[in-house]
Image (cartoon, rainbow, N blue to C red; front, side, top):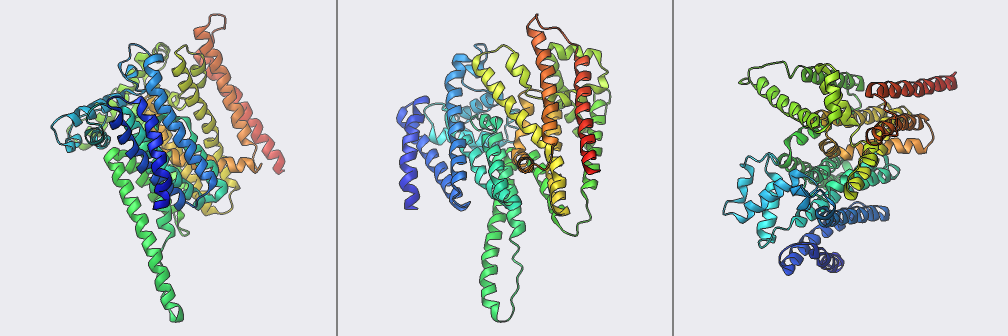
Length: 539
């Protein structure tokens, strides 16, 4: 313990002294409050790094991830009021997200009031339906920042929370594929731009991102540490000691799993439910004698998505009894989806034009597909805006357009795996990733901010699946990754021309329908050519 304190305490005091310069109120209080968070966070990261095996590569990934999130938090706080939009109240206060601004302001008001902090769970606040983050933020402000509103303290906690998941994903990756999988998976998890932005903001996503990683590791560890009591003959005493140790480890992982799900429930029950479903199916597939095949799951997901789209298409014309449980669920879904669509249509003239040209029944499928492309890289590059927003837009888009081809290529990499059981498990991980991505797209209504932040919650699974694809690509056993990159290049080229024609008159205008037809035709040529080449190799 002394060895840990010897380094973490001076480092915490030094970092917090710099951090406090950017906070409001009394400098001494700012320094002490930040120092406490730094000390607890750095101590936890040091202990987790030691527990994960003290890998030097893991240490540098953790350090770089934390530095990027802290630097981003400070930069956003300082430069948004200067280079953001002057008519935006949240940007002038140093917040990227309106939800963060609204919830953080509400939490400070709660901390300053005479109301008990537990009232956070009973307040009707649309930016924090469940009260978990509101309670945490209000607690920090009441006990660590009573004299001034210091949003950077919450961003600091979010940064450490986001980074705490890295050692757990490292250990989970090693369970699934060894160090060759752990390094790329952890690097993607730590350095993905959307995750860095979330980890530097007062949002719930950085907490959820790490909780998904923690619960997945705990589940894998619990599944592996089966005590299997075997007390026989001369080895009886040795087996007792070994089984006792394994049982103790198993109990710890069960506690980690339970506490992880409890924290999820306080922040977002929907995420806890999805993670529980994912782990339950994973457990069934990992059994050698499981009768559930990946075909059954694929059929189930396909039918579920089809049902969602059919139901969504009928939302605007169907009237249900709101007093029934089904009617209540449908009504809530209807309002949520249609509101997001309305927000997208109201904020975009070309979406209004397209909606007017297409049947109402395909509005939601179109918006969902459009959400899969968000944030659109050509738009981030071409659309005029301030420097800070252009930088954020480009970095977020580049991250997604590098990750998406790997997530698609992952399915082409699965046949290269050795055992049928391994192929089933990785297929399920890939399907779970894309099912969530589609659900996030549907729920976010194609919004360029909500869609990516919903999507990134399950970054742990996406990082694992993308890393599995990257390992296969590095082994040179499939040409489909370069073909998928070619399809993406076609998409980006046409959309670049389309966006350029909207803002610069010297570029010729191509209708949206014609552009989509060209993209689909050229992409089909790439795919068909690839299939023909592969078949020639097998002949």
